Image (cartoon, rainbow, N blue to C red; front, side, top):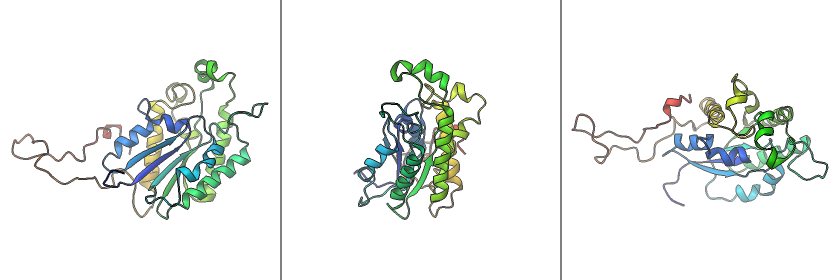
Length: 256
């Protein structure tokens, strides 16, 4: 491991997580915002459901790890909500099993550390018409529906209320935009840059409002090696240097 050791933020989930570095995705935005403050660690797996997540949970999040994450953002549900196939194959997980799986994931993550913070993302909506246009050649007949996403989203949120962990209702958040069907997706399922901005804003809202002993909001965390240096760029007065350690080129997006 390289040093200094920074707080670790782990993004854990299916393709919404794995692809979060694509097209100005929400994972890449977080990495930019937390540069010199925290390490954003990607643990995303396209196609996964909550069953597969449980199978490797101890491997990805070992309880005996020397350093435990400061923040874990979890997303599973979209693939679980896919309609069951007559063959029994595919990612569908019955609703009650999904609920129990998410509860087990939460219990494990809470056991890692007293200071580990957790945020669950619920299933976002989908654009069924766009999926038919973009993915039918790869995935065959549409086996997803926005309604099933809503049902699994609400189930996730209910588990989080019971387990007293933070949750973000993505199914509702994306649909706050009147043009969400047109701008939030790359293919009807996965998030575009506009969809990702909504995710980041919702995450920042949780981090800003959370009454945690140590704030994990990007503006509250210390900057690594932030001291003034004679090697900083020379300012316009031609006599002094400018400390650029806190420069962030994403501030214009007004995440707060």
